[in-house]
Amino acid sequence: MQTANPAKHRIPVIVLSGFLGSGKTTLLNRLLAHAHLPAIIVNEFGSTPIDQQLLRTHNIPLSTLAGGCLCCQVQDVLTPLLKNLRMAWEAQPKKPFECIFIETSGVANPEPILDTLLRQRWLAARYRLEGMIATVSAVNGAEVLARFPEAQAQIAWADKIIITHSDRATETQMDGLLAQLARLAPAITPLQAVNGLIDPAEVMTFRHAERYRLQQTLSIPAHNFYSVSLQFDQPFAWERLQAMLETLLMAYPKQLLRLKGLVYTLNESDPLVVQGAVKTLFPPVRIPARVSDDGRSRLVFITDGELAELPTVIMEMLQSSQT
Ligand SMILES: Nc1nc2c(ncn2[C@@H]2O[C@H](COP(=O)(O)OP(=O)(O)OP(=O)(O)O)[C@@H](O)[C@H]2O)c(=O)[nH]1
Image: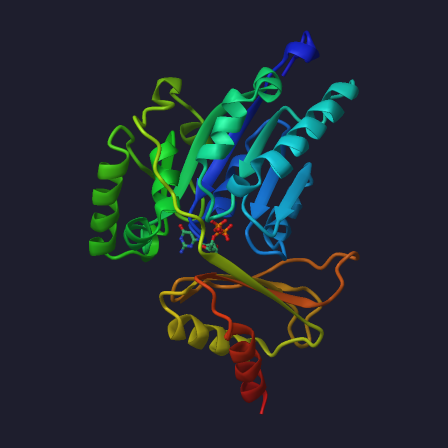
């Protein structure tokens, strides 16, 4: 993109939202492959970031904000980051990026983020909010939307809604989700993407008239989400860990909303990215090791409400699975 007067050029920003495990990073991987000189800001609720492992193959500027959610940290974290990125952009004759994707945490209410981009003068003069995309899982989307106002806000503010996991959903689950979406975002026709497969142009074409169609903002109570991050020095026997994680997801079907991890397994130098959400452990993906990796396994658990006993339960399950 040619920028005749860089000081006046507004860098497009695309906000990607969607509840925990609904497929944001999977979709982002697809969109990045077709974007012109993108940069990414990834926000993860857990204090040990995992998404960067899944996005690192793109070799593009990546800022990770972990250990909280952007909607609560807009002023303290997002605003200075966007200011720094912009100043670095202006200082360089060869522009390092031409657009920015912000992947919010799965529990973020996108409203304060959009509001900042649109209303904060310094930012609004230098960034242009291009549109907001929300992913929603066909498997648990209806339940998630019924339970969590944050998830409702993600849908209500979206310019594009992408239904994921339709390959795993029953007809009843899909019908339930479509009914919820028709209620929360009647003006939007949802699109579907299985494993991120969708025409990026279809996702990235925004009709600006749809912005601010909400008459009133949703009243969202303070978050009640917690995260627990654990690290392990010894490699795992994958089958045992897999069985343990599946047991754990079934033991806490309501509270355990998300698990993610980077796990080293016996006799393999490359780590596994492990993912789970609400009663489901997804197939793990092995990714190439990097020289900067420290070889320690990490697991992050996000719960609805505090599950103080979780670390102890996990350690006991791991010990009993090794005997
Ligand atoms: N079967 C199936 N799996 C999918 C689909 N889309 C994503 N996944 C899987 O769902 C899991 C979660 O996907 P992510 O892209 O990490 O979800 P996310 O929304 O970025 O997760 P958080 O950032 O933790 O909230 C991963 O194991 C993906 O491979 C899909 O359409 N079908």
